Length: 106
Image (cartoon, rainbow, N blue to C red; front, side):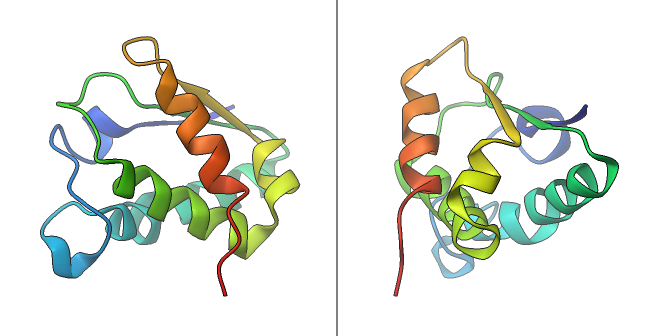
């Protein structure tokens, strides 16, 4: 299993949706860490575990941007079946991530 701990590997203070919204955006997280780690996990034949706990919280736009980009690029079922999302501090974040993975963009 490959693991991303956002608080340890990316930031304690996640930003908003886009680079233009400020530092540590969901778009930046996708580009810098999430996409690369997801590809590596697929190549290794393991699931990617993403730990959301330990940060100061998330704007829903951060989670939406990062995980909808992943779902749109790699396919929603493929992504969801290869992810393990951990959020013991705020369990509702797991549902937000799942909805984002399955969100279709034009």
